[in-house]
Image (cartoon, rainbow, N blue to C red; front, side, top):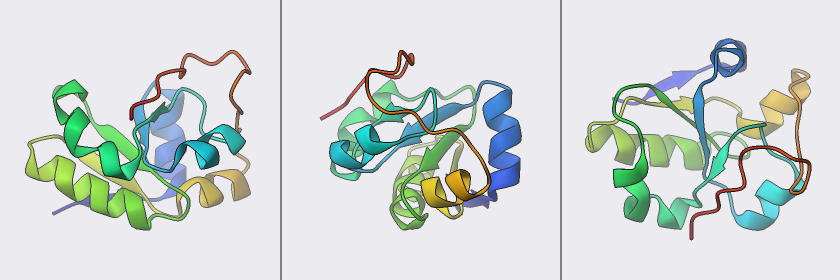
Length: 113
């Protein structure tokens, strides 16, 4: 069963250095994403499962929470402690969470295809 967390719990985890995977498309990601998140578009999730940590939770985010639920379910089936962020990037932004765009100097330059 996939764990879904609200944006407040995600914000606390993010402050503590959570591993975040954004499963939106690249054009959505560059328009604004959670700082430090890694882009793995939904279609590429299966191909990158081996790259994901097994020793810490993986927070999965998309635009509104639908794609992240699917991706988190796949990850959970592969033994990853995946947690889908309810409301996605939209809820994060509405709650005042920062968004960055490509080129703003974040560590999240990794883009999986």
